[in-house]
Length: 294
Image 1 (cartoon, one colour):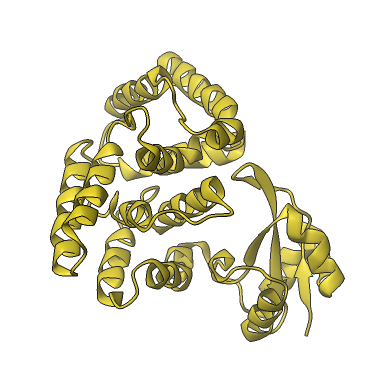
Image 2 (cartoon, one colour; image 1 turned 180 degrees about the horizontal axis):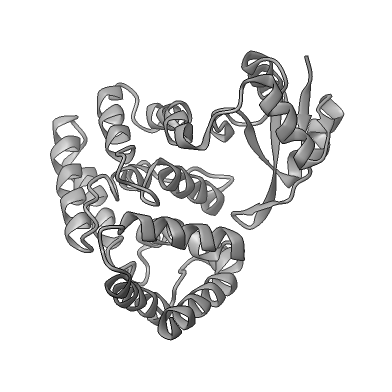
């Protein structure tokens, strides 16, 4: 049995990532990752996503460096590879571990939210997006942790998703108020979670609203990806609105992009601006140009 790592080439959250796999056993992979200090939340069903800063340490610990194409072949040959269609389901384990960290003793509520995030009709607004927002919050707050109310708001912010802007955020906020009140969260924290969820409609927190800025920045972090990642994001959003004609989608999407470009600031925190602002404005401008001239 062996553990393999490919070069750190995959951009996300202001750095680049490698993939860490085993060619025989997930137990072996988990043990190696734990010993190397890779957090459990980095596990994605059949591999760990590890940032560039850990690459040399992983190799020193015994991971065998291979090219990305070789790593994929070894993963396929191992029988551990999870098909893309099942990857959303595979996120159950890392997401539930995160939930139980921020709100222990309420696993049933976490499972309900996961079921909502895993609805078959969701493409972009699924569990992958939830995990991306949670990871972005970690990036923006490290070495500290996000406030529990901010993390809970991330879990609830698209818990209701019908593809109706404004209504979805309001319904999600009301769901947070109902479920978290039933769960015994303090009225002050319930109100704060619901307030934060509602902010994800327009992404325009007031100056000095640090918690609101954090959540909005994390929710929009996808805008600051590389060109390929952004194209995948746009394609997934289009799938979310597959029931809408191309012309109507282009009109509605152009309005969304114009709104995002008009936000000043688009990102609020210094770290978010440094990580994502330049690429986000470039991506949005290119998308708007394509929509207008389509």
